[in-house]
Amino acid sequence: MLAAALLSALLSPNAHAEEPPEDGFSMGALPAVNYNSDEGFGYGAIGTGYWYRDGLQPYKYALTLRFFMTTKNIHAHMIRLDGLDIGGLPLRVWAETGYRSTLAANFCGLVGDGHCGDDAASVATAAGEAAGLTGDDLSTFASRYYLMRYTEPYGLFNLRWKLSDKPHRVEVMAGYRGSYYFPGTPGEVSPWPNSLYQSSYHTDGETGFSSVLQAGMMFDNRDNEPAPNSGYWSEFSVRGAAPVWGSAWSWAGVNLTHRQYASILPEKLVSATRLVLDATWGDMPFAEISRFGGSRDYSGLGGQYGGRGMRAWRYLGQVKALGQQELRYTFARIAPGTQTFAFGLVGFFDYGFAARDFSDLSINDSGYGTGTGLRVTWNENFIVRVDAGFSPVEDWGNKLYINLDHIF
Image (cartoon, rainbow, N blue to C red; front, top):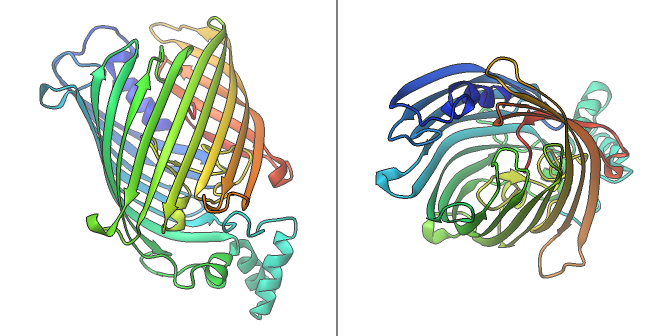
């Protein structure tokens, strides 16, 4: 959210000084605002408290509370705790609990099933007419035919143990996420009636607890984590769910991610690349199929993180490959008073491939999106991102995304 990073920049000692922070506490609250074409205009509030101890940067502990919803009836509320050097050890702990609910998750079925093609509108209308609908009822039905609604209360934590520090930092990671999925909302627990999801995949929806363990390693020598100019960040992780540790589904997955940064023109032009391979095996709900594993939680293929220009969840498969290339050009810098601002342009190309599973990689599909964007950076850490993406998958229609930070 825009206000989240603004709040961090206002309160974090790194935003204004290089000196270690004095022991103490600070806090604040701001509106949270963003926008993207898949979720609509988002609004809410966010508050963060920082505890400073032992000269640690940027803090010893941070506690964040967020209340957030969008004009497409998406809810994303959470409480998050981030702690450094726990117990005097090289241990970082990230814990979060929250509540997600959406009435408008895009749903085109599994790759290879041929949904959301050129005839998508006529298919949705025909399904509504077959159900005896006319007029406004038919229009409403058709607008929801390729949507999925579900709710997810969740809790997670990640532990990161530092084996060595920069210039080549190595960390081991272990974590857990528990998500309870059910269709619809607490007031109406069911999929959208006669939608593609209900009529072709799950009549009663997917209800159950997904209990996921994860472990991996990270390798990092980026010169600046929020906006790198050079270096790399690589990650390998495995994850899985099983009834033994309380899951309604049983599956396993692996994720390989590599990011590479190169300065083409010092202080001006940076090449940024992200390559991802993610694969899962077993029985899992669609909300899990859409997820990429690793230390960062995002979904695809399609959407503002996993394929700009394509609708979110456009390609669903248990094998996913993602390649993203950006050229980031900084065209102006200003320094009013003690503040610094940088203004940049970005050109990007995102390509994604998805296959149903490893048993038959021939059942697959792929797509790409391209576009341009604007970046505004305040005090090195606060980055506002505005991207406009276009894809032949969506007949070159504009997908607009306004959020925080580079996507990688």
